Amino acid sequence: MEHSSRASGDLTAALEELPLFPLPQAVLLPGALLPLHVFEPRYRKMVRDVLDGHRTLSVVNIPDATKLDERGMPIIARVAGVGTIVDHAELPSGRYNILLRGRARVTLEELTFVPPYRRARATILPSRDEDVSSTATASLIASSTAFVALVRERDASFDFRMPKLSDPGTLADHCAQQLLIDARDRQTALETTSVVERVRFVTETLALQKMTLAGMPGALN
Image (cartoon, rainbow, N blue to C red; front, side, top):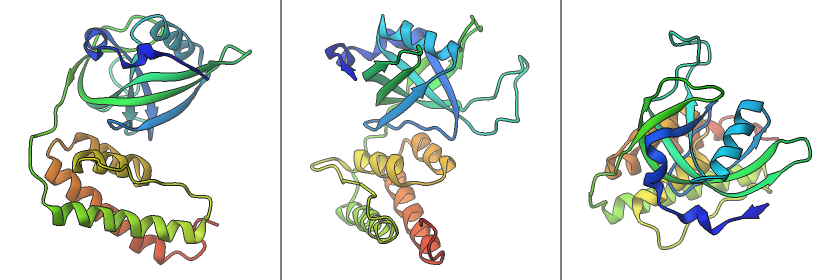
C-alpha cells in the first residue's frame, strides 16, 4: 500500500462537501483503522477524487437496507465517522484497497445528489469534557480483557491490543470498534458523546457479549 503524509492534514477542508461511503453494518470510530475493498465504479471514482484532494471521506452506516428515501436510496445514519485514507493500493482491475483512520464523529446534512456518489455537509460532534473515574476505566479494561480471553479460547489467532496511555474515551472507542459484534452497538457508541456514558455502555455490552459467548460452545469454531 502507498502511504502519504498528507493524511494528517486539516480535516475541516473536507467537511463542506464530504464524500459518503454508505455501507450496511459499517461503523468507523475515531482513532480506529478500517480496511476496505472498493470495487463499485462509483466508489472507485470517489476514492480517486479524495486521493487527489483532502483524502477524507465518511463511512456511514445503513441501519436497514430495505428502507429507502424519496430518491430510492438507502436511508443512512445521521451520525457517522470521518476517516482519512492513510494507505491505499490500486489494483490492476481498477479496484482499491484502502485503509482509513477514524478522525472524528460528525453529524450529516446530506446535499443534493450529484452522481455518482452521495455527499453531505458535516459538523464535528465533540465528546463532552468529562472526568471518568478510575473505577469505571478499570471496569472497561477488565470487561474487554475477559471478553478477549474467552474469544482466544475459541480462536487462538484473534488479535487485540489495548492501546497504551490512552484516555478513557479513546479506550472505549477502540474497544467498541474492535470488540463490539453488533453494528447497532458500535453505532450507539459512535453516537454517545458523553465519555462517561460511552465507557459504561461499552463495558456493559462487552460483559453481555461474554455471557452470551460463554453459553454458546464452539460458536467461533
